[in-house]
Image (cartoon, rainbow, N blue to C red; front, side, top):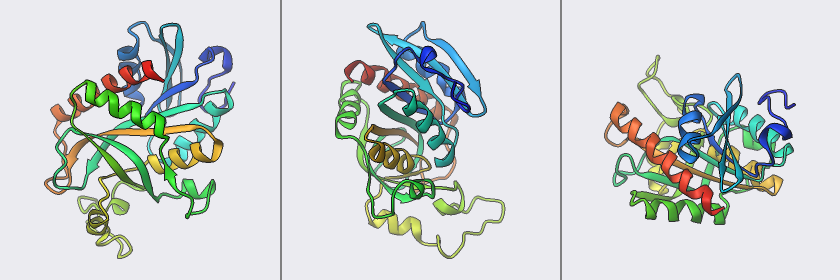
Length: 249
């Protein structure tokens, strides 16, 4: 029994693929979109898990919590149970003006602004998504007629200062991060989130397959505040995409 995720090989039934939402509250909805008969497995701290079946093949859904540290624990423990394919789903803030809300953003590589990935590889080691899994996500978006973008994501350890957000308690961002949003826009980075660089680095180091798809619930060139109806649609679209994608892995 793995200490944090409270799963073992018997519980996951040989599952090789896991869907990784950050929010435990999204696990049941995601898993039951994949398979209406999905079964609850475990819940401990930020880790909630369900098991689905597609044509007899087990598919795991397990939340990771927010950020790289908790995600790394989840990936470590699932990898040790034999999981090989890791697909992160989540919400994100787009930083390019032309990205519509709630478009899908499929990460091909991540700017490693996090600390977790440094515990696995030096900073000049790239955080890149698995080509095969990424193509499956792209194909699913096309089949579902969803707007999507592929490209570079920036991953930060913090939601406020590290992403140069000024709607925080102090309204202050350290000089190190001031102007970083504009620079990333000039570098054609598509979005900010907090997990993909850790996931993609760890999967590459371990010889596993990692991919990330997020729905842009806000375009930060226009506003910092997402709309609740957009959030609901984003969650539905993500569940639909992975439900279709896992059938092709």
